Image (cartoon, rainbow, N blue to C red):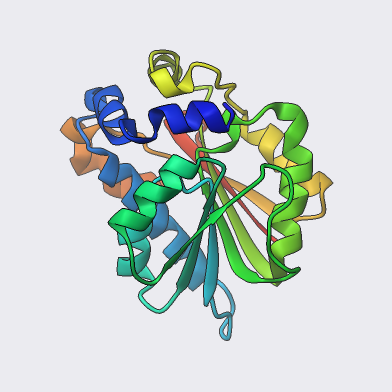
Length: 232
């Protein structure tokens, strides 16, 4: 999906997303929050002295994660970057104070080396042609500080319900899902260290009483989504 396609869906993104995930029984906010909660858990698991003062939300769209960044990381400076100018405009309107919304040309991130303590991306790369992944991963690594964290969430192509949801979603019409081991290998190839896979979202709302088990099921490759985390 290019800038024009993202712009086309910017104003109706939330409604389309909400309709597409209705079978899960959860609203888009549930999926946005659990990702930031996982990032918080990852940051808290770092050695004493690790400070996450600045985070880049790569492919942030309209800023869906912003309320949860503010809740879980109230002192963190958040930079939202996207190729869609319409999405960025909506984000600035919704969150006019304290958040940086920055346009991206799709190739080189407009930041100095080592600018960020962590980089976060939520289900972005399946929209980007595979041949561009390596250069973008290298860019994410460049703007991270030494020992900084990257956390990339994606939809799991091994989960049939996820595949169905993607195949029926208007803004996923050109999407190509990425296997977790492929994403991990790509991060290793550009120099990230110790990439780890964790599968997420195993239970719909009707089985939410089972969700406390999810943290121990991260090895099981059947969650609806997964993340790969690594160090600079």
